[in-house]
Image (cartoon, rainbow, N blue to C red):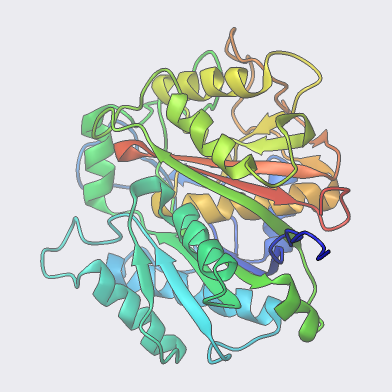
Length: 386
């Protein structure tokens, strides 16, 4: 009698390269240490247009006097080159897929600015990548959704390696738009604090190099982390306001966990979207309570937007990199600006100093305008869940 068929799990996806450009600098190691020390890149930034606040988190290495399209190109190319060097590969590697995510980039300010796909093509051309790139624009979740696309291409066997990019740039139109919407703070960005009253725009780029574990082994590449699962969902509640029930956020996380063998009890750390707006913070608190309950034991929740600003289409990958670093070091940075947590926040928050966490699994959450909610499940290579 023949043996019954045995289900063979798919080859894991590993992260072999990381790079970023941020308001605190461009070195992953140095910026991570600044985050652990509680540093912030948010500064007064002059505006010719009256705004609710003059605060912004600007990348200091690229002059603000350059046009937004050019600045966005420079962020992207620099971060991709850093990630490729970290992974030990070149942009012309066989079968490499380049996937770029952004929000509006510089297109709100200049009607003559090339389309977002033209921007993606220009990035590919300047990097020397011969294949047509993929481009995704799903508001603040664009970077995370680029990772979702890359993961699916690898899981399906269509690609062995994907370079996933999230990038965005601060522009006068974006600052004015968030000022008029009332989403911009007139004081400071204080995620999950009882005094929270809005966000601060930031900019930059983040890049993750994804590979099948088999491909990484063949070239003896180092694995920073495993991308164990991805999940996305849309609440379709409105153009800007999220569904207050948080059901779509919960669904995105459940989809990321599904089939991985990792449960909510195994999550040590959550990088929250943490914009500092009362509406967003309340939705995340509700979602996290549904997923994890209240109190200890439960994952430590942190956010980096008080340090790096809200970089829109770039934030998903920048924040995923911080989860990788948190799992590697067993530490999460303090939430900059957090002094007195919201009364109903259900889980531990690091205040004033880094908080230790087990080196197991973590989640990165992004919640975008239009209801785009995305969850990335990351596991330390040495974890029992690898």
